[in-house]
Length: 185
Image (cartoon, rainbow, N blue to C red; front, side):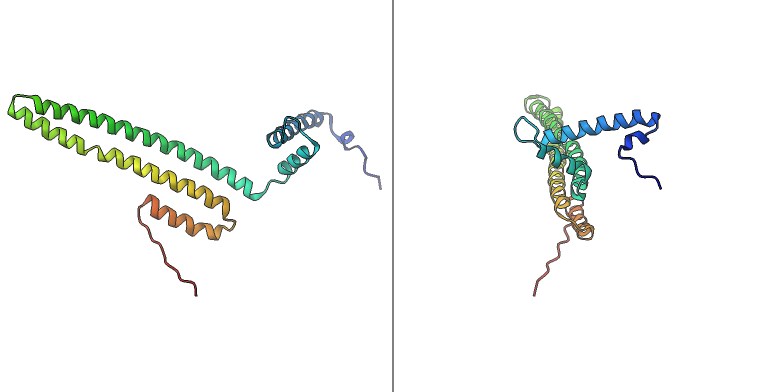
């Protein structure tokens, strides 16, 4: 039998050599980037390189799941912030429009116009509650998303995670809290 070659690079096909060189360069960049991200001080030591290699070569299950969950949660928080700001703008516009109608009703000499403006202004002022309700719900959902991020990060068993997600969804999103009181004996 033939003895395995001490230099496996000699076994590479010429077309594979270019791909190999590109992969080595990509791995080098990823390794240096990871080592620089976690290094202390301005210089990268051999310990930084070894720990970066371990993190890149053997990523933990928790770090992979946490990164994906945090990406989804961050995106949802950004979307909720937009809804919240739109709600605030709607509330300000309704408030100003209601004040204009109430002022027109207070200073108008025609009785019919006065009653119409005062009634319309009062209704518009009551409609301010709708955008505030949207903003409150957006805040509630943001809090739930932050809690879910912590829960996903700390729970290892998916069987334990499923009831927590269900309870959180029912209580926060649907507003239907179903808390069970259990007593340990």
